[in-house]
Amino acid sequence: MKAIRNEKYGLPNVLQLKEVERPVPKNNEVLVKVHASSINSWDWDYLTGRPRLYRLFFGLFKPKHKILGADIAGQVLSVGGEVKLFKPGDMVYGDLSAYNWGGFAEFVCADENLLSTKPANLTYEEAAAVPQAGVLALQGLRHNGDIEEGHKVLINGAGGGVGTFALQLAKLWGAEVTAVDRSDKLDVLLDLGADFVIDYQKENFTKTEKKYDLILDVIAKKPLSKYKSVLNPNGAFVVVGGSVTLLLKLALKSIFPKKSDRKMGILMHKPNRQDLKILQELLESGKLKPIVDQSFPLAKTRDAFTYYGKNLVKGKIVITVE
Image (cartoon, rainbow, N blue to C red; front, top):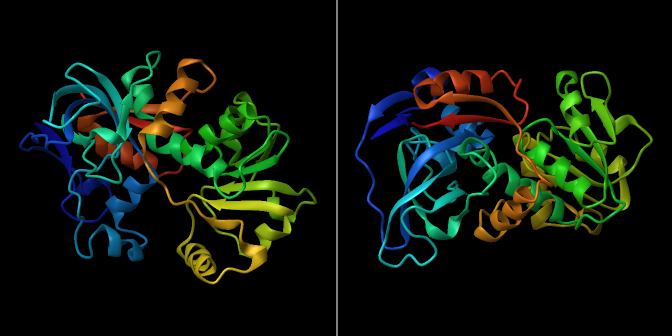
């Protein structure tokens, strides 16, 4: 089968299209013919090996996983002997980041519990944009603060994959949403229902008078004191991604928590079938939609990562597999 391999850390030019052996499903696995995958920030971190601290988890000197791509959408070809949820021919989607990755390939094996039925109204390309970003958004809004109707929510980095889903979910649950991103993404955020938008290149949201019940930050880099200054007394601050310095500070606070810090923390992503099913229902009802910026064929994965690295993406970049 054809697959995109990364044998060493580096920029997109280290990626190679190669012929590799097709995987064989274990007892708990299904073999999926991949029709589409998508790029997440973790793929970029895994490709570049930066920040270097991440190599403690990715592999110290070379990547542990040689085929990236956590999100997949495709069709089940065969199943292991203990599989009960799926049969050959089923259309599925899911996030394999907690398993074996491998989505940038023609075929991949996946634990059946990490997959759900592909939303019937979505193409494979659209479905591949959902799993990791959609579940992160869902879990982030429920984490620590349990979003409620009427909450004032700020989403920093709202124009990316997680942010566009979080914005739609927050509005669906009755929150007032302030979306923060660069100027060229603000029209998309307004179209998705944002009540207020902030161009971070012109305005610092931590220097305003407004207070929030929940801040969801996809690219957190500011000092913790700045976030606290715009949180309501019982407000929650949830970090999906950010600087290593901030992540380490939050990790230490979780070990030695103060009462005032109990609702400030890092979202520990947990891919699971149940959240995928929640998203599936919302997608099929038309209440939620994936935002796909561009699609690239598997052979052009280098180009897709090059574009991703420019930080211009609105929503998600999808890799299609013929």
